[in-house]
Image (cartoon, rainbow, N blue to C red; front, top):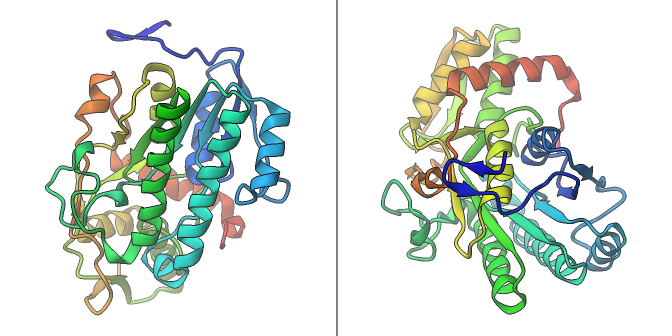
Length: 324
């Protein structure tokens, strides 16, 4: 197919060498699964073989492999606790990875690069739903500002290389993700993975109650990782522009409603207690996804269906899930 609705195909992935940086993570692995439909050669490298925070290693590897396209999904990720506990790692590693990969991509004359940011780049009290032009219009959420600043730097790097060198670098901003390949660390994981593990362990232990951080009132938007993978491939093929694109569902749910849904899916029937002494984070975070919709893409996975598949994956993997 050469077109998506009225949008012409700008970059055909068929027959291309495509490097997925961060292929072992939730977003990167979803991109790899989606690329299986594109008839391209997927290139990957484990962290043990390639440290993207190391400039010399990164440049040597990319110059040797000469990919036609790069999906830059690598980075240090985690929830509120991880961001507060390891601020230097979050800002330093993520800026280094973005800079090293983009600089090497220009040197290797990579045809196209897609950078994955995060919706935490938006101001804490941004008007809702958040449009792309709200970037840098107000203070960030303090509990994840280190990660957010690094992701903003990645967006600006992509724009700078586009403007100075004519590099076809684009960026997308995903909302909160869930799905196969997530990190289920008890302290350093995101909300969906943390709740799946917590409710599962409580069910097994017949625990009478489960504590959830915060008041339960903040609202969040949750996107299936496989929907994100599909969106990234779509953007790579059909979009070329300076502005980043929001990627989400355009629908939100309170943390209380989300926790109750996860508990039902896991089969936990005890009491859910909300610990108001713990931080809530941003009060509300909903993306305006109309810009991406104009390029022919919308999320397809209902939240309950996606969470059921995620829990099934969690059970199938048993104790093999990552605890970094």
